[in-house]
Amino acid sequence: MTSPEQSELSPSSVWPWVVMAVAGLVTFVAAMSVSPDAVQGQLSRIMYVHVPAAWLAYLAFGITMFGSAMYLWKKSLKWDRLAHSSAEIGVFFTGLAIALGMTWAKPTWGVWWTWDARLTLTAIMFFVYLGYLALRRTTDNLEVRAKRASILGVVAIIQVPLVHFSVVWWRSLHQAPTIIRPEGPDMDTSMVVTLLIAVASFTVMYVAMMIKRMELAHLEDEITIEEQSHQGPAAGDAVVAPDLAGGV
Image 1 (tube, helix red, strand yellow):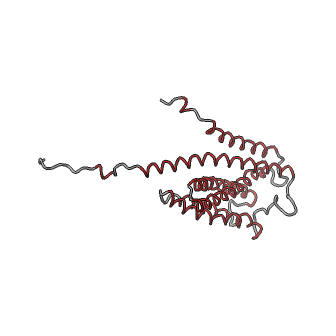
Image 2 (image 1 turned 45 degrees about the vertical axis):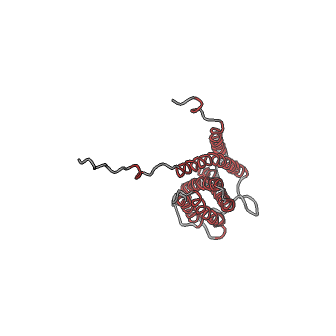
Image 3 (image 1 turned 135 degrees about the horizontal axis):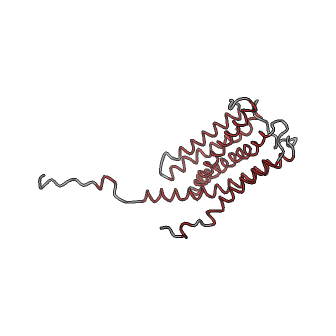
C-alpha cells in the first residue's frame, strides 16, 4: 500500500504543470480575442502558435549550445543535463512549428511543402537535433556521452541564424520579417501585442518544461550511475557445472 505522503505530489512537483497550463490558456485566449487578418481571415490565428514555437526552437537550441560549451569547460554533468533537456524541448517545438507551417501553407500556397530556403533549413535543423538525441544513446558512459553530444551541441547552433535570416539572404516564398524590421512592424498594433503575449507565454512554458525535464534527467543519470556501480555477479557466473562424479 502507498501512504498518503508517498502518493501526494509535493508543490514543487505540481507548480510547473500549472504554469504550463496557464501559459497555454493565456495564449489561446489572446489568439482568439484579437481580430482576424483582413486577407487570411481566421487562418492567421495559427501565427500565434507557429511563431512562438519557432522562437522556442531558437531559444532551446541556444541553451543547448550554452550547456554544451559549459560542459566542455567545467566537465560537470549538470551542464550536459541542461543541454540535453533543452534539446528535447527544442526538437518538439521545431516539429510543432513545421507541422503548423504546413497547415498554414496548404491554403496559402496550395501545397503542404515546398523546398523553400526557410522550410528546407528548418527541416535540416530538426533532423540534426534528432541526431543529437540519437548520438546520446550510442553509449552508457556518461562522460563519453556528454563529450560527444557537447561537441555537436556547440557546432549545430550555426543552423539557427541560417534558418532565421534565410528569408533575407535568399529569395523565399516564406513571409519576410514583419516585427523586427528597421522601419518598424508591418502588422496591426493589436496583432503585434497578441503575438508578443504569445511569445512571452511560450517562454514561460519553456522554463516550466525545463524544470521538469531537468528533474527527470537528474534521476536518469542517478539510475545509470547506480546500475554501473552495481558489483553483482555476471549472468554467466551464476551458472554452475553439474557434478557428474556419482554417475547418472
